[in-house]
Every structure is written in structure tokens, then in C-alpha cells.
Figure 1: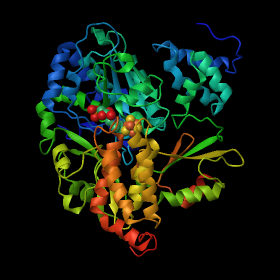
Figure 2 (figure 1 turned 180 degrees about the vertical axis):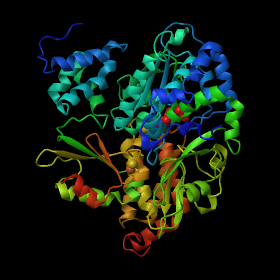
Figure 3 (figure 1 turned 60 degrees about the vertical axis):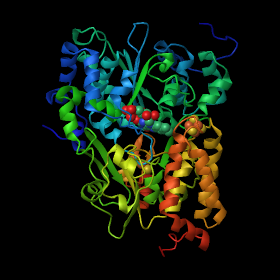
Figure 4 (figure 1 turned 90 degrees about the vertical axis):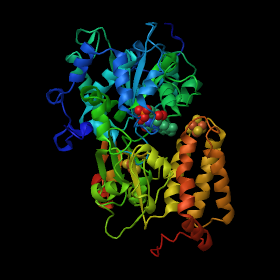
Length: 429
Length: 160
Ligand SMILES: Cc1cc2nc3c(=O)[nH]c(=O)nc-3n(C[C@H](O)[C@H](O)[C@H](O)COP(=O)(O)O)c2cc1C
Ligand code: SF4
Ligand code: FES
């Protein structure tokens, strides 16, 4: 049995997998089987049992998230949204599925919608993913023609319509409640929780938002069972994960590997180690909003609890590698410029604090830093990063690479301030 | 529905029918705000004050509310742009992979700064968040086309 269910139909050299090939490989069998033989609560139990956790960044258990949706009292629409916004810097995993196996997402959405009794689905996708948008629309047409989508699907009682919603930009749209506001045609400002989207989401109706990769796991769990899914992981976490590496490694890329694969294996075996002339200095394990890890963490397993214990987060599972010839201060300044620009502006610590942090970092990098700047950075980090000081997780996420960077690369910060210049710029690194 | 007949609509019939088609599967007219802005932009390249007013009128909302939405999103253009927009990734992996050099090269080759349009009106240069192609950094989009593994020589070829 395949050990790489998510990528079994992905062959970038051959283009996208169409519906004929997808069905030929067992695709949509889970939908046929489920609609004929399982009721929604049985599917929900299966997903809970499989221990699937969200692949969008926070790692929330999917079955538990779905169980908060109130029972269907047939009083109006219920929604399922696939989060295909993928704008976390350093993340390039969902695009792979969207471009090369769109039916996998559609099948995952049909099954998930059935489980939570949703009758309308949206794929919220960033506008720059032109190829993915085109292929998704074509795949939806194919699925409609085969009656996997529409009214009374395959003769069952279940109806589900699916739309592609193309975004108009801004990273904050990926935050699930901001995404809902954007789908409603508003500014993408995050919403206060509670009420949670499960109860009052899109246009006030019960709504589930899941990441693309999360949803793509559903058909495989339904087809092969929870035990099989759990056996895919190496350690405590179930299933596989799309891991990636970018930066100065020999073979940057994205690979489907067992949950619990070590950072070292991903870096050395799959990414081929560092490019000649470059040494490993640190990494962000799961995108821009995760804490730096360094050499001593290379044997940490990429699974939720282990990375947490090491002081960081799984995030999106796509690593950004820092090498010894790239300035950590410059890298963190780049990250904070991004976070400052993408703040939605709703709360003060985020709106005012992040540009200040950005300015200080750019000043230090440019050779204008003072010892006092480090103190301000540390104090600001506490204001901005504390959970509860801001309305959403953007600001705490923004602070993770800064706090951990100050901890691990303090020598580099101090040298910038002492010498009033960046020691990476003149080749004397 | 009642439109304010005193405001002459600069929107074309095609634009109006595209927008009405979006509204038809939404719970209210305002919910189509972003779609409507994108539709008009797809015909005209950008959203002028006159377009904004006409869309607001069609959606029965105030100009101010619609402008608040339009200016929130970085891919809605409230100023004229060139025939093609260059979206150059300025996120972290592209930065590590010498994206700044690519940016300098584009600026000097096309003689523009970030946010500006070339004298021949062909290109507008804008920064964009990670394009999800970091294993091929540095990356940019020109119009709908993705260009990756950029070098200064590639930049010259692309904009020859
Ligand atoms: C600022 C911010 C940006 C986010 N961007 C994304 C994104 O692009 N894609 C995504 O799937 N989740 C993103 N998330 C996480 C979502 O809020 C949400 O947790 C996720 O879509 C839930 O899906 P999951 O349970 O399947 O992981 C973002 C969160 C924050 C705070
Ligand atoms: S933390 Fe930042 S992005 Fe989130 S709501 Fe507040 S201002 Fe907006
Ligand atoms: S950082 Fe530039 S494409 Fe991801």
C-alpha cells in the first residue's frame, strides 16, 4: 500500500491528473462508498480515531474541530471552506496539490462536507495561483459532469455545490475569520472569537475552514481506515506531511514524508545538504511565523509535540534554511518588514509595534544600532507577542522569529552594534 | 432593485451583467464588493474614482465603505498601472537567494522604482508576498506568468 497517499497522483512532468486517471487510481471510490454505506457521524468518528491534525499551521485536531458544528436542523446553509491562501513566506506545499491533483481536494471536500452536513463549499485561493485556479475550475466541471457535485449526489440525499473564490491579496486573508470576512466581500479583519466559525461563520451560518492539505487526507483515511493512517507516522503523530526546504540547500523542494521524520533527514537526504561553500546556521521549521531552531535541534522529529518542546512550531512544515553567509539580522528585518506590511491594522501592538520593530532592525543592519535598541526590541516583543494582547495570531507569530533570533544570534546583533556595520556585507563573515 | 438614476453609470453592460451574476448567488448585494472591483479591474486595469462610485451605486453602498475595501487589498489597484504588473517576491527565501540584486536589476533595466510604471506604460513594478515557489527563488510574476530561478541575465531576457 502506498506510503505517499497525498502525492501518489502528482507527476509535475506530466501535468495535472484528470478525472479519468484519478478514478482509475481509486479516486472517488471513497465518495461512492461513503454516500452508500456510512452516515456522517461514522465518518466523524473515523477522522477523530485517525488523529488527523490541521496542516494549516496551528495543528488543531480536525475531528474535534468538526465536532463543534451544531447538528443540522435544516434551517439554512452550512459551509465548508478550503483555505488555499498559502501566503506564509517560505511555504510552497498546497500549490503542488492544487496544480497537479485538484480532484484530491474536491473529493476531500465532498467527504468533509458530508460529515458536517455542509451544502455549499468555497475554495478560497490567492489570485497569483493562476494555474491552480484554472485547473481547479476544470476539475470541478469534470466532477459535476460525473455527478460527484450538485444536487442529490449519485442518487443519495446529499447535495453539495462547490465554488472557487479568487482572493484580492493580503496575507491576513489566510487567518480563518479574516478569510470569512473577505468571502463576505468585506475588509479582511479577523473576527473576535467566540462565536467560533463552527457555530457562526460565513453569513452567520455554521462554517468549517480547513487547510488544503488537511482536506486531502480525508479520502485516504475514509478509504483505508484510521489504523492505516496512524501507521504512516513514525512517532506519535499520524499520517504523512508535505515537508519542504528552501534557501541555500543543494536541492530545495517539497516531499511527502512520514510525520516524525527528523529535521536532519529532510535537510541532508531530501534537500541534499547545504550548497558548497555554505554552512548550516539555523532554520525556521514551518514558515516565517515559527521560531528559529539551530544545529542542536537537527535530530528533532518533525511532529507537533517534539518541535514544540524544542521551542518552535510545526507551522506549515516547509523549512527556511539560514546559512552562515546570510545575515541573521537582515533576515529577521526582512521577516518583520513583511509582518508589519501585512498587519490588518486593527490592534495597536501589531499596527504600531511591528513597524517600530522593523525600523529598529533595519537600523541595526545598516550600522546605526545601539544597545538600547535591543532592549526596546525585547520589550516590544513582550507587548506584541503576548497571546491576548492582540486580536489574532498574526502578531504573536510575527514575534516568534525575532525572540528566537535574539536568543540564538545575539552575537551577530552585538557585532552589528559594536562595529556599526553589517559584517556580512564586506565579505569578512 | 432601485438604482440612483441621477448618477450616469460609466460601467459597461458587460461589467454590470458580470457583477449581477456574482450577486445572484450571494445573500446580499454588498457581499459582491470584492468580486465587483475585480471584474471592473479586469476590464479597465484599475479602479478610478468614477468606477468606484459606479460600483458603489450598483451595490447600494457608500463610496467610502467600498473604498475602504478596495484600498485594503493589494491586488486592487486604485491608481493606473501599466499593461502588465510585475509582482516581485520580496519575502524571506527570495531575499536569502539574492532577490535584492534581481530587484536592483529590474529597476535599472526598466528605469523604474517600486510602485512606478515604465515610461512606455508597459510595466508597473510592485512587491508581493511569497509566491509559493520558494524552491525556485528568486521569483516574480509578470502579468499571469511566473518566472523563477531568476538571474540578472534572465531578467534581461524576459524584458528584452
Ligand atoms: C496570519 C495568519 C495567516 C494564516 N494563513 C493561512 C494560510 O494561508 N493557509 C492556511 O491553511 N492556514 C492559514 N492560517 C491558519 C488558519 O487560521 C486556520 O488555522 C487554518 O486554515 C485551519 O485549517 P486546519 O485546521 O486544517 O489547519 C493562518 C493563520 C494566521 C494567524
Ligand atoms: S494581531 Fe495584527 S493582523 Fe491580527 S487583528 Fe490585530 S492588527 Fe490585525
Ligand atoms: S519567498 Fe519568494 S517565492 Fe517564497
